[in-house]
Image 1 (cartoon, rainbow, N blue to C red):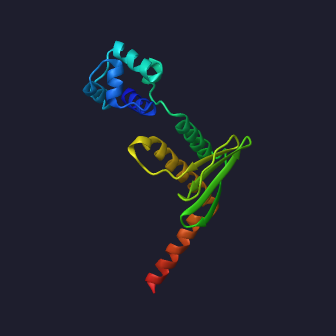
Image 2 (cartoon, rainbow, N blue to C red; image 1 turned 90 degrees about the horizontal axis):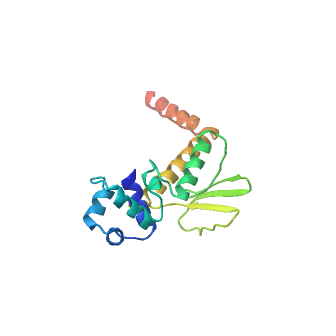
Image 3 (cartoon, rainbow, N blue to C red; image 1 turned 60 degrees about the vertical axis):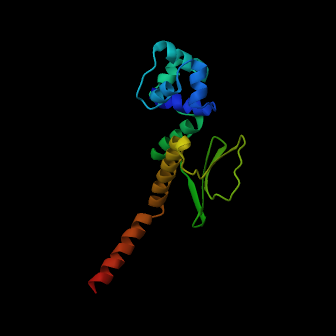
Length: 177
């Protein structure tokens, strides 16, 4: 949506609402109203906002404008859901989980250990555990969905649902006695 795209791009550029308002020549209140979906900018102001943010008006108006990392996560989710890619899951300790896959000689790692250092180069892409905050909400939600999707398929392969069923059966047998 327009308001979300303006807000995201403004933050990516490191602008405050005041910075954007000054550069566009409108009030801070008006920028706030645009970002909150209360007001819509005129075509002239929309063009000015797009210019300041370094994008086209069409890019601002796209239904969903994803950052490169969000687009990458979305593609990984889709490929995982369609079972086109498989992930290896390794649990070292309760809070130390490593998930990886290789696609066209690029290794993708999801690490859920806040103490492990991340690295990134042309052959490795690391997604470390994200802490939720409003500025990376979309990225956080996509990473969470990717993790849940991977674990769903991994757990089916690992028969976790069978284990749960077996444990529930044991509990039910215990209650009958």
